[in-house]
Length: 219
Image (cartoon, rainbow, N blue to C red; front, top):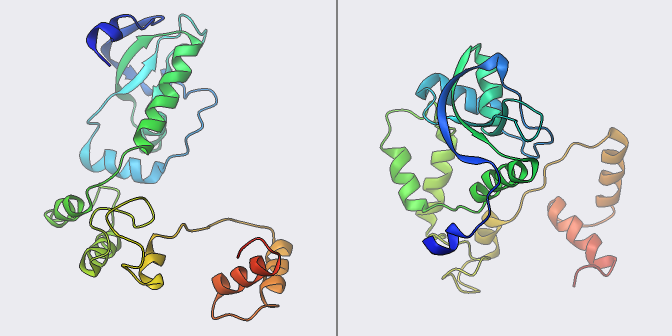
């Protein structure tokens, strides 16, 4: 978007903002925040690296909710866990509509990012330790294994990358498959096992595939 086009975009409230040192006790998390962050990992990062970027806080003149965090809600939670009394903040003053857009954009734009896998391996490998990075040694080893396999070329073979169909074996491509992880009541787990055990297969994936084929849901 050009500078002229940006100038024509209507913005309610004050987005210029100002840096403020704020008491943790005075801040509130965003009402209805859909994001679920890893507070333990964020707390570890804060303890190791300090607070290298401020929270974005809405003053609340237009919403009636003073000192509400729009970006950095889980950083605030982690600061509470660590017993911090003050944090750095960038304070703006926007209405309800703009506040919700900022929350959505802060979460979604992070999701839309991607990695240069080779650069990531190089970055992590160059560190003396991984404490405070959100990564552990097993993560780095898994990335190195994937790199050594020659699979990635910085592209997921199922996501329109350079890897053509048939380039890799099914076993290789399985490393890119989605993973299902959920908690279910014991009776659901028992029924799941009973269902899968009706079918032949070397593992649950093969048995589930057989069941879906049997139901006509998978060719």
